[in-house]
Amino acid sequence: MAWAVLVVDDHSMVGELMAAALQDWNQIKSVSCSTSAEDALHRVRQHPPDIAFVDARMPGTSGVELIKNLKSEYTRTRLVGMTSFEEDETLAEMLQAGVHGLLLKRSTSRQEIRLCLEQVMAGRSYFSAQVTQRITASPKLLQPPPHLSSRELQILQLICQGYSTKQIADHVQLKEMTVDDYRKKMLSKTHTKNAAELVDFAHRNGLV
View 1 (cartoon, helix red, strand yellow):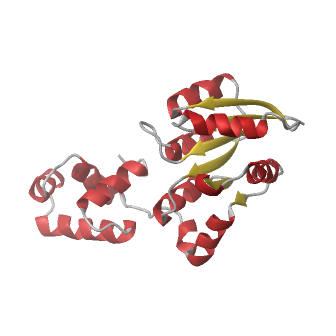
View 2 (cartoon, helix red, strand yellow):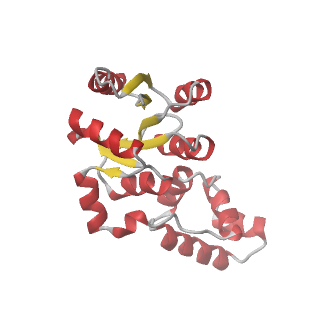
View 3 (cartoon, rainbow, N blue to C red):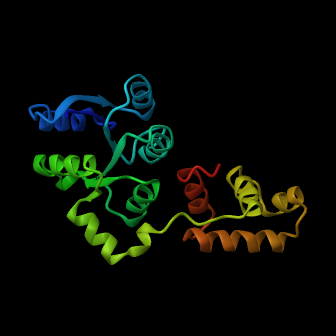
C-alpha cells in the first residue's frame, strides 16, 4: 500500500528536501508540502494524509498546536514531529502532544526518514537515537502537562492579560497574599521561574 505524506515546515527547502528523499520510493503515493499550520489544515481537510511530518516551531500557529489539532480531528493520520531545537522543553512539548515519532532535523538522513515512516505506518513509534537518549536521561519528558485547578486557570488568564496582583485579587475577591500563593504554586507545577515564563507556558499549552 502506498502512503500519502504531508510535510509541514516554514522553511520551504526542508519540505523540498524531504520530498526529494521520498518521491522515488514505491511506498509513497504522494508528497505535499505546507509552510504554515493554516495551509496544512486546509490541505488536510481536503485530502487527509496517511502521515504528516510537522516542524515544532513555526510562525503563527505552532507545529505543536497543529499536531494536537490533527491528533484530535484526524485520528487515522500518523504524526511525526521534527525540530532543530534539542532542549528538553521542546522535546517534552512534542512528546506530550502525542507524536508517533520524533526526528531531529540536523541529524536526520534519507535512510532515517524512510525507517521512521515505515515504523510509524506499521503502528510503532520511532524516535531518533538522540531523542531516545534524552528520554532515557530525563524520563520527565514523558510526563503529561501539569493539572491546574479552575481557580489557578482563572488567575493564570488574568496574569496573561497583564493584571497586577492587586487587580487580580480585586477581580477574584481574594487577598493579595492568596493570589501570590496561587502564583507560586503554578510556577512550581509548570517548572517556570517567573511570570513571563508562566505566560509563555500558558500560550504554548493552549491554556489561554
